[in-house]
Every structure is written in C-alpha cells, then in structure tokens.
Amino acid sequence: MLISMENNMRDYQMEKEAREKRILAYAEDIQNRTLALSSEIVKELVDERHRQKMTQKDIADITGIQTSNLARLESGGRVPTLVVLQKYAAALGKHIDLKLCDKVEE
Image (cartoon, rainbow, N blue to C red):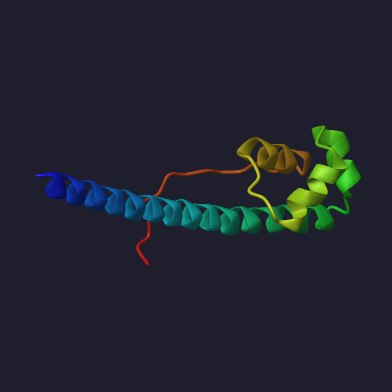
C-alpha cells in the first residue's frame, strides 16, 4: 500500500511538472505573438510620425508620455499597453481599430 501511494505521488508530481512546462511554453508563445503584433503597429506609428515630420518630443508633449518611454516603445523591446498605443495614434490624428477574430490555425 505504501509503495502504491509513493508511486501515485511520484506520478502526480511528474504530471504536475509537465503541465507547468506546457503552461509556461504557452504563455511564452502568447507573449512572442503579442510582441510581434505590437511591433507591427509601433512600426506603422513610427512611419506615420516620420511622414508627419514629428519628433518623439512632439509626441511626448502631446501625449504626456516621457520621451525616454517613447524611445523604448519605438525600439520594440516591450509589449506596449493599448492605452499607450491609442495615445500615440491620437497624437498623429489616427486611431487604433480593434476587432475580435477567430484564431488562425498554423
């Protein structure tokens, strides 16, 4: 009986560790996809800023976002919040249009 309980506990622990690894991999995948999508939007915003001959300082003055934070945003190392993207777009006379879509299987 004791051996059976030990085996059950070991099996449970192994399954728990495997489940945690799957969850971490899934979360990392979501983060990477979100970063890729937000990078596309940020690139469009930066391109529009350049077309309008505006500086990061101009955007900072309009939005209240610090120029150092705008520089980090534009470098693409972080996933920006929707509020920040909307502020940036509004400063350019644009808006962000969101829609909910079915997941595309790869």
